[in-house]
Image 1 (cartoon, rainbow, N blue to C red):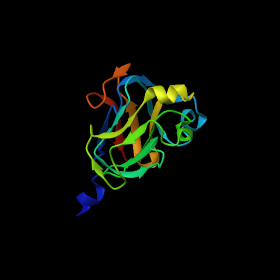
Image 2 (cartoon, rainbow, N blue to C red; image 1 turned 60 degrees about the horizontal axis):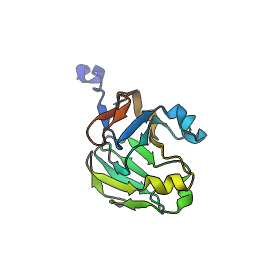
Image 3 (cartoon, rainbow, N blue to C red; image 1 turned 90 degrees about the vertical axis):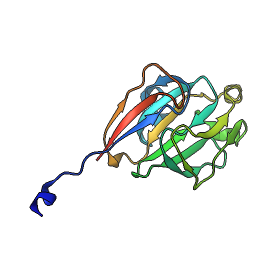
Image 4 (cartoon, one colour; image 1 turned 180 degrees about the vertical axis):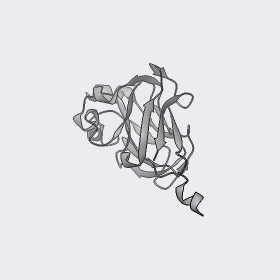
Length: 164
């Protein structure tokens, strides 16, 4: 009995697969203070070279913005993630975005979430850099971006998170 009172819960590590193919960018370089100053949460960003967003983890779709430019995922461990395709893309009102999922869907790491047309974003003056942030950082003990400069969507790790 005493032993169980003093045993520590083993910390769990969650590995995020790269949700996009492209170049890894520090969150501090995202051209939007809400992301660069980590107001929404900590994480990483990717400058996509292709327009297909995949799930970085096994999770449930908890939010899908009506304009399909951003998606919220929640893992079984309670980790909450926001992926925001591009900057100021809400103004496109869904133009150039095609979702493959709905709120409530269970997804596995590597599943298709949203297809988007980078040319539509660029023509509208929207930066395509895409933040991937943890919105409930209070459950995170440690975050490490492990990706090299460029990543392949669904094939390489982007970052690891150790939960408290």
